Image 1 (spheres, rainbow, N blue to C red):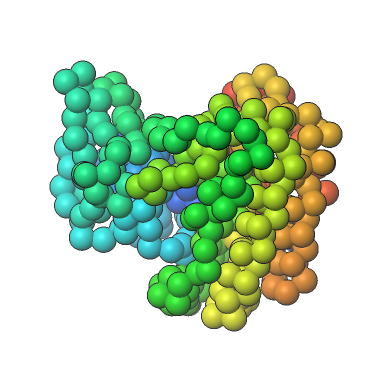
Image 2 (cartoon, rainbow, N blue to C red):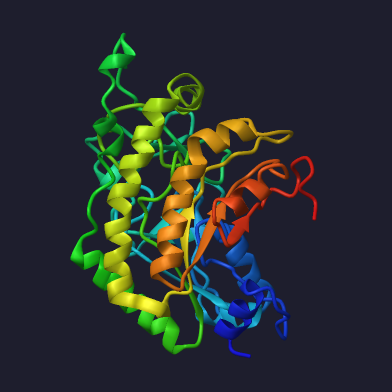
Length: 341
């Protein structure tokens, strides 16, 4: 079997010739840059500085030589920008706080506090408020909440403020994704894409670390509170997101068609270490209809599979996610209650 056939066979609930492997196909199936370097060392590969292609989690790019050894079957085809709003290009050297020489994008600009914390800036703009912080002893960045004061009256909240980042996809991004799709498809890889815009309340994105001056509800705690106290307002945000996302998906489908195997839809975490962030009823009332509309459009108009990630303890939510139309569920936190396979 080719890599693509192996993954497609598994996703169609049939037996492949071997277990499909996805390392680095998405932001939730990657490896920390330090692990990539250690694997290269273990397998006796050329010693090179590993690229940090996803700076939020400091994920390392897995070069072709290591991909071959690991038996990677899945290839990503994403837009050019990182979580912090700058492109993966113009690579430069950076010495990490944990003592590793790596390569980072040219607009990966940081400052260091007197305590040794590292601060990263949206779009690489050192004049803007920092949007990411890595503690002195850390290995990845945490989003910095930069929420402006909210109106005293909820009636004055504006849905548009939480929609600034959801816009029609640019032709240049579609062209870039198409180029990656065609390259990886020609290698018989299973291609997964992520163009953004479909993450309903993805808590990694709510603070908008890629924006210089985000508006709206951007505080993580405030967002979770809003799902309980302002569900109608949050639902309106989701509704508008889907209205913007579907034309973007239509445009992507027109450019890439069946060469895309799957699309990353959402990384919203529904689980804590021991339970869930909300009840099944809240999921059904607030999230289900929006996910269903999106998944139904994709399944009606494309051959793509849809991919949903969630951390935490979500055994009670897996049937709900299936009912919402997701084909691939990525519950990676096996240390959470009830999640040990």
